[in-house]
Image (cartoon, rainbow, N blue to C red; front, side):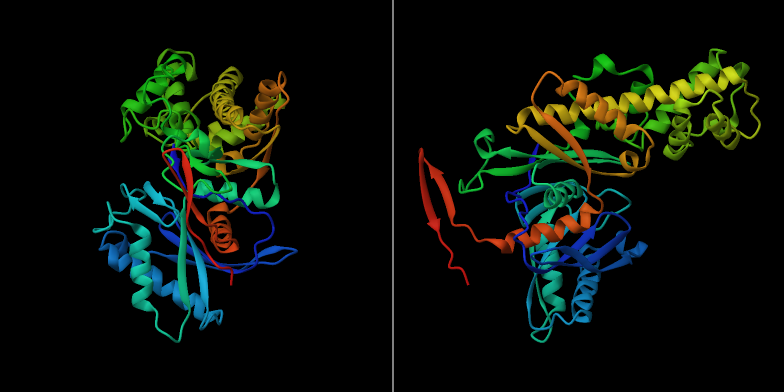
Length: 426
């Protein structure tokens, strides 16, 4: 449950042009977003691939490479002689100390640059931009750093004023929500309005203290034990696109070994870990309203070249697949409901993104059905709204929020509230 220091939500009063930098994998994107009183739009988006030597070289070289592209992007759009705010989406594990201050905990996703872990990545980016800037070109002001889940929430809040939860279910899984400051014991400063902050739950780690053991199966446990992060990300391993196909593969192997499937003959392709994809599982689930299990049979033929299967085999495979994906949907809905119960609001919108939730034919529907069942005995209404590209668009919105208003800094000491800084509006 990490503080993001993002407190304001968009209210359509944002004005002007803002930059966004989205770094979350082997590519990064630079976006120029414009806000007017009537609409918001992405004016341009430029994608760059990061060479292998930079992903394993020095941090300074990596950030110099990124800064050079950001400055060239700004020059191309004739942002000369202006101060322009930039929101930075950095989808790696961070310990955040402020809206524009966050230290890298560890590299993931095939990155291992020296001189970055334990350092403030915003400061590293600012230093690189300073090395690339001079008086005749734009002054790029890095005003905020967020992760992709926060961006999803912020992007959704621009479309729907009731949006207070952000959700991503793709290769991984995470959520964030808006919490009242009065409920946060570790809130460090500034009790001015709005008295709220976005919390990054990192809920993929839920269950590391054994509270989910009562629903974990032998296949959940074996997958976790043999993973590179054993004992970690327990909840994520039960709901995300990276792990669901592997659970499916392990159940199939068990039933084949027990003679329930394929006359006990194991297809060689099934012996390779992580050999099944979420797209195959999605295709199988499309047989929900069919009796012929045509899609399931097609997937079996594609996955296992030399495999003799019967109609009964196809039905069993469908049932296994369906149980795994439905369980994931119900667990996701349970997580959303846990957050919704904390929020003192009747109508709650959940901004969502991620390949599994967006592309699977039924998971979103199953999540909504379970949420409706949870809320049937209460007055809460929960609605899922798509928030595509929140990782890029959301960063620009947060940058706009930083420039929308300059609040006085108010601190609480010994039960009394003091205003220690005020700003003059230009």
